[in-house]
Image (cartoon, rainbow, N blue to C red; front, top):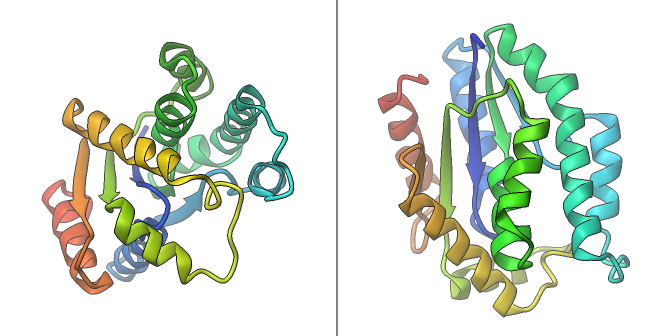
Amino acid sequence: MKGKLIVFEGPEGCGKSTQAQMAFEYLKGRGIKTVLLREPGGNVISEKIRAIILDPAHKAMTKKTELLLYIASRAQIIEEKLKPLLDGGATVILDRFSLSTLVYQGYARGLDKKQIKILNDYVAKGVKVFMTVVFDVTEKEAAIRLSKREKHDRLDAEAAAFHKKVRAGYLAEAANNKSIYLIKTDGKSKEEIFNETIKLLCKKRVC
């Protein structure tokens, strides 16, 4: 593939979506062919799946149902958007990808990580992540940030123990994977975090 897939990850409240938007605008401003997408979502079908997954009313959703809905959404965005864009040489900034599923459904939900990796590999065949940036945030800081949100989805409403497992999962994966880069966000403004993010992207020759 000619393009680069850059994934922004992290626990709820880490600020990754804000950083993804800022990075997109920065790269686009420099004349780099850049597209910003999110997971789950990014196209009509996947956005409908997203609405089902995150609906607070769907408290009866099982772990396996949740997992397979994420995988289904990913399969659609890969075929409809990611492969064509990357083949066309675009830089794609993706707000969440397969690492989220491994962390949320594996580390936090307790589903089999090997099976999750098999499913991720199955739908992502032919698509390689150039680099993943994980925005780390402590549980205490995340709780403060989430309390300021006007709307809360089904994952926002999970217990503190769940969010603690999510963070631990990200930290574990970052410690064991050289293509995952960690940026700590506690006590920093979005501008300070952005400066770190762009410095990292440029170091990896994205900009």
